[in-house]
Amino acid sequence: MHLEYVPTHLEEWISNEYIKRGILTPSDLTISNISRCFGVETVIRNGKSYSVNIDGTIVLFLSKESRWGLKRNFHHELCHGLLHEGRQGKDTPIPLRELQENQAENFIKYSAIPYHMLSYINFTDVTYTAELFGVPVDICEERIHSIQIRQAYIRGRLFRSVLPTMSKC
Image 1 (cartoon, helix red, strand yellow):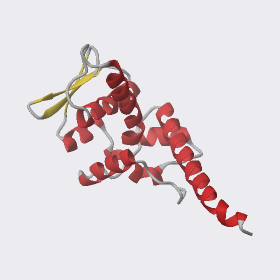
Image 2 (tube, helix red, strand yellow; image 1 turned 45 degrees about the horizontal axis):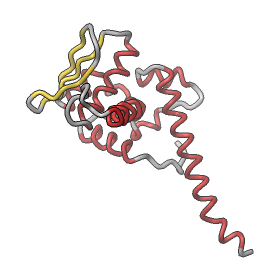
Image 3 (spheres, one colour; image 1 turned 180 degrees about the horizontal axis):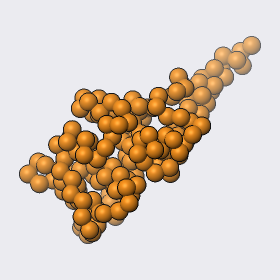
């Protein structure tokens, strides 16, 4: 992993929560293990995926899909359960609903391939990395891309910070 990489606040939060709960390696990232560690109930069934909080217990209702779709839905709904209050309904303002959906989509890549496990990523073999983390290749590609973008941002910021000093020469 490149030393210039700085995680987002969300990445740090997810990793800290995983570490506290003993989720330390890619093999720990199963739906059943994460659910158990967070005290989340997971119900796999026909129908739409959604999450609810019932008397303080987060319940994720996940649509029966392929293994890849199920994992994506799990992380998406886990975000709603952990970070969003209440349930989205027709009374939820559209901008709030869109914000929460965007947050949940962003959450997927960080919770499926958390910051503290980046050393397991093989940047030259995305298929291997996707299989190791048990996620679809597109999630793995998105995660790797987000890492590369943040590295470029850090490099650009460092370069811009030395420009005033260089101009004095």
